[in-house]
Length: 110
Image (tube, rainbow, N blue to C red; front, side, top):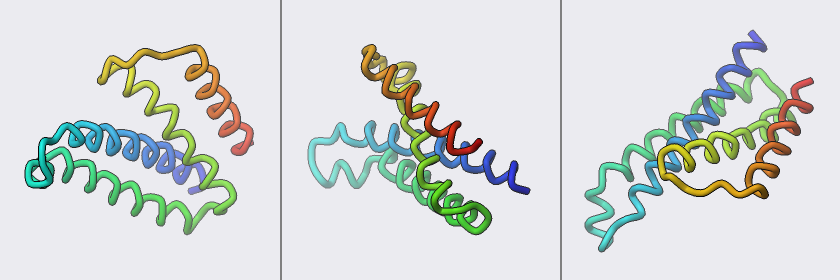
């Protein structure tokens, strides 16, 4: 059961990163009305809600002091998504920082 919670946690972080991507896409608006008509806003909000629900489920089984630091895995997903989908440039600082976050997450699990 514990291993399944860690798998769900990783899925939760990925969903959160994808939610941010949709909100980034929604940020290209001309007026509040056009923002409210933007489907990306609602997709991003739904994915954030789904991520929050998964977080609540995970917290039922895992320690808060473990779950909260592990949510930083979202930054790892975000780096890949920003490079692949948004074609953003990755600097050495971003790669090193994200690698350190990932190593820290692994250390928390062990």
